[in-house]
Length: 180
Image (cartoon, rainbow, N blue to C red):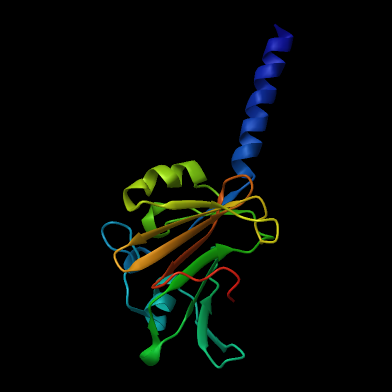
């Protein structure tokens, strides 16, 4: 009887530990998503800044292309290229590798570090999502990529080797392998 009670206590303890291993945060993108939880384009950097309640950091690359990023308190990293008139027509979401966070409230009602590859395959089957294994020379070696087109936008979901969602990119064209 004592052994059985000890087993129950240990099971409960480890379940509680696994629940708190990841800190859960909400992205607070509600004003940027439509009724289907799809990101609304075009957008402006100032609207994104207001929704995330954080300032926009502008920067340029070696080709003088303009970009913006936001680092809200949730730990989510949001970044994009900036078009004429501060217009945003593509956007990317991820979490720094050193942060163990689950970020919910993202487009399509998916969550970084929580949504699985299998859940995504099922959810995005209606868009004929294409699955691809990632090579050893990628950031998520042994992981997977799921790509689908919804309207005029392509969504790329990147999963780690444990099949957990790590990155979301929504663009007007597919980025060729090796670009960037």
